Length: 313
Ligand SMILES: Nc1ncnc2c1ncn2[C@@H]1O[C@H](COP(=O)(O)OP(=O)(O)OP(=O)(O)O)[C@@H](O)[C@H]1O
Figure (cartoon, rainbow, N blue to C red):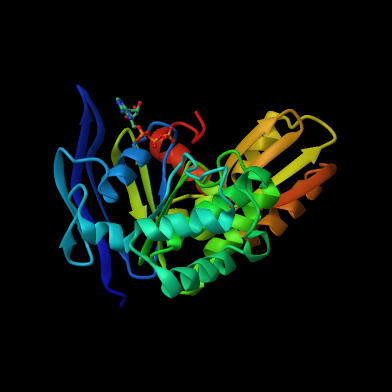
């Protein structure tokens, strides 16, 4: 069992009379990737601010590697790398000079500094652009340079606050490749996002927050098991589905839900293996499917289940 790297207990933060973080607790194990998921305004950035010692909590405790995190504590600076939402790069300096600057801020000098610059440039796959200025980079490359900056002091825990906002899909994949390589090297990551599919891809543990409170704190598999439907079938019929057909379908083994929009049926299934018998039943009932598709239910549905709202509301 990996050791506990970070433990957050009953964290509270108020902005005036508004409680932005309301008794949040979670843990991150060494080498684990925690997905901190919640809609805009849920409190993610405020939590990140407290984790890296930039914001003082109004209550609760943060313990990192056995040491209590307090604003400005040197131990925190050493162990955590932060990739903030707002890019913090100097456009007039080359990628290499930017990294040297960040390294120097962490007290790195001389040969060690240059070794670290080389190492992190490789980790984010930007070695061939070291002499170029970030102004010439795509949004995704700038993000990767930011990740490199946060890695300069070789922290145990890397915190990324919505790193794919404003990044095109191809660059997003390059960011994921970088993060997956860091996971393979045993770094612990905290990844905040309001995109369920990103968190689902990267995280081995998910904390869902809304209105400053934890709604779920478990593995993706355990979150999935909360859903009645584990698979989905979308069928488009030539004719709109009549009530008797829907009733018949509803009584089929494995069917957990039906959403009908004219001839388009979204059928929730207890398991993927229920799809074939259901298709067979539809055919026997005289239905002519024009098109059908199977899908895995998404964690998006879980958020809807937990809050009654979709994640992007
Ligand atoms: N400096 C501040 N002063 C007052 N209220 C704030 C401040 N920063 C954040 N808030 C409020 O606190 C709540 C949580 O905000 P926070 O930025 O932590 O959420 P978030 O989940 O990171 O959202 P986003 O993805 O939009 O950044 C929101 O209601 C926000 O309006």
